[in-house]
Length: 352
Ligand SMILES: [Zn+2]
Image (cartoon, rainbow, N blue to C red; front, side):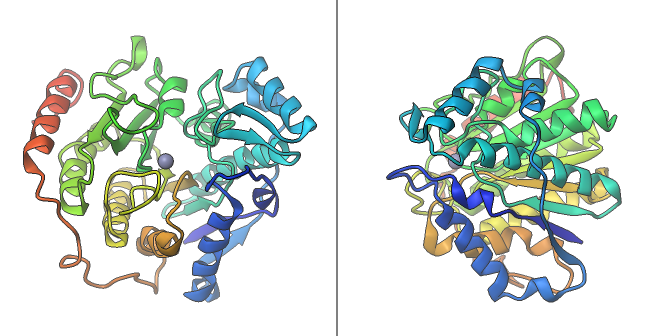
């Protein structure tokens, strides 16, 4: 069972000259329509309500909320060079947080419920106090915090497979252990937001609960999956979340203008299969996705379909991906990175 969360407001926020645009959603919706999965009884679409302005204070500073609200009232306002409001942004952002929240609520409701919030603007770079990297408010973090505070969920794991480190999500839960944050991202030496090194593990109660898996540039599918398999399943099994939230970004695709990971569309199917298997094992298959980045328009639709393939009963994006997964052969740097990650995480998790 998969539920897509959509709304017209998500198309209204636009930034001049920036690829984080409504076209992204159009490409994804076209792909969904073309493969006809909406005809299936286990696939649904629903509309979310916006959250209230005051709800944002549960994760963001008053100043950030004011800056985005007033910027949007004025119209075109650059909060940062690449994070720019128009007159619809504030409303869209409130509904984007509402979309992520609804995705979480749907997933929580019963076993094997999977939801996917097709939201814009994205959120995973927004910290408590700062909008950045096309993100105004942190949708997935709003949802995680809401589910813990209001729905009494005790442990949530967030897996972020966007090309870029989910620095905002990490910031918001850096001193908490009720939300485990795992980000796989391209090398912070070359890739925005230039953070996300293995040693960034969280602090105080959150120490050990922020997992950074920075990957060498142009890593390719097989090496990416090797890194995933070495770290993520062990940590998720140890942590036993009640629900897995996913920051789903597609800018890891080969030749994405903002990405460095060189993944193929089949790589996204393999990642989703792994997340699905883990969720079935530890949290009754409950998964809620929130859309983050992805800017390679001619492959975004296929990467999206590949990433939902395991969650739709009578649909498989590709029946035999094993021969199609790419490889960079870049073993040495990856090996060094994995040794470093394991060394850092060993005190906290049963990693061998
Ligand atoms: Zn990204």
